[in-house]
Image (cartoon, rainbow, N blue to C red; front, top):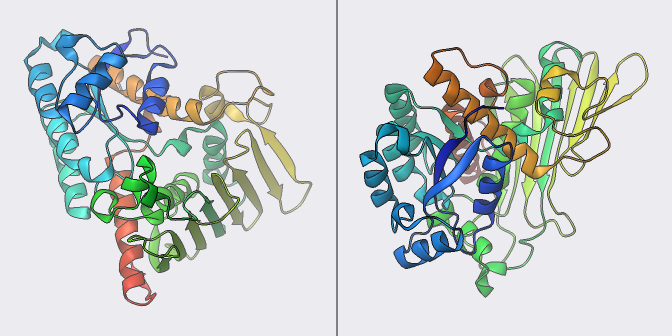
Length: 383
């Protein structure tokens, strides 16, 4: 935990937004940051109203992100925001993220990072030039037992990986919810604002979880993205076959039309000498199955959790930690990375474990290749 709280501003996340409140809660959870500024909506009047509701002072409650950037840049260095959190719909990610990064502000950006690989490349170039801390909130990487799973795979506990199954299934879009004006459904099913449907919204989380835990790099993929709900203009289901460098194989499925499912993100990794299994809806348990010996249940905070998971844990075992805490671990890592940069020391611990601009760029590439493969009738494509 950092000693001095950082100041942050937010773009998006105002009235009616689900994820903005999640980010604000996560950012301040460990006392590492203070919410001091914002341009919380694409509509100036709503932006100002949202800021007043959240208690922002008038001089840091901005009608647009452009004014926020200009006026925060004009403040003395010790009095401006230390980072900006951008939680707008997908189509409005690139422009503010690139502008703030170019101006030297550290950035936390919701996923998927941007709409296409050209924008991703530009963001990567901008961050490389300015040296800012840049995080993409693939928040499931923040769970302690995801970190433990990655440690087990990387240290050879299950041997070389042979097969990976990952799925993220929801049922909330099993009907045309967007037709009734539901805000989240409305923009997430709009190709102009979302870019992609299920594959971008939740499939990108599944891809990132595989990369985080296994370290495997996709070599080729074959995909079938589908739209099941009549009248919907975007995919709501996808199945992807994966070939990884080194010979491992994978199956990724994501769907938002699986009736009865809530947020069923799960992964199973099978190696030559064992297997691991983790499920987001029960995140405090990780199963380890050696090829020889009994299957073991590892619990968050338990004796086999290990130091990496312990560093991301706040309360004793048996008291469940979940979604907000996983998000907060990314913000802790960002705060620690910012302090390390300012103090001229190498980052360590959580400061080295949050998803970066390069993870975000890979996720954008994944979405593009899935949709391209689908358009070509499920052809195998190089990644």
